[in-house]
Image (cartoon, rainbow, N blue to C red; front, side, top):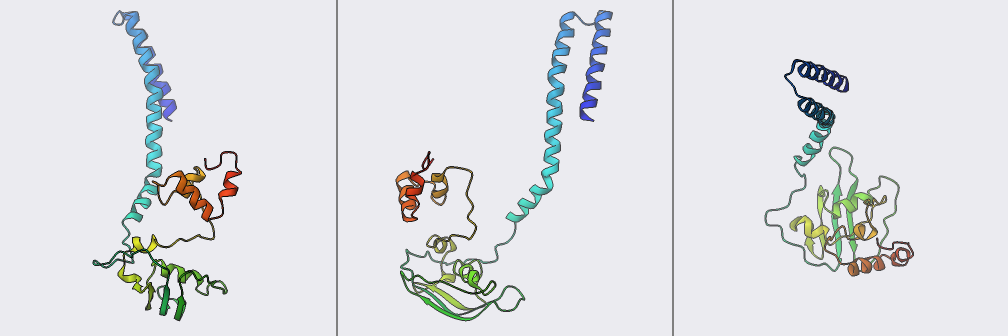
Length: 218
């Protein structure tokens, strides 16, 4: 309909302009300027209407996105939360219970002590609570009972930023940004130098693979 109305309007302008030229109200120059303006104006008007229609179509999606920002964070920091210093890695789950909302308890009386530099594996069937332990350690949730200590610090007493900056997590399904390898590696620290990016890749045992690529870190 927009194109049809623009076409009708353009035809009307041409007809009126021709009549004005014949009646002597328009000069040939006036006629040329009017046509030039009309042929430039209507395509831009059509484009503007199209853009406004696109904005209207996406308004509902935008409202949903903005509503996410207004959701209150469930796990709040204490006002006097301290900054967790660089850690050695002593992790202690002390008599931890946890359940999601009104569901049956996922974890019950978990007493787990992981020493610094110790590697452990959590093995069990789906739903046994392996991932839940990690979510509790990162303080995405709080235990319904018990406490979690890192180097003797109760994680409820420290800031979430300082806690999570001391923990590295690799999810089962890794996602990458549509950018360079260097950008993806440095995402957590945008100020990282290429030397630091390469060192991180070396520690992850990826440096040889990256160096074998045509554009390497680019």
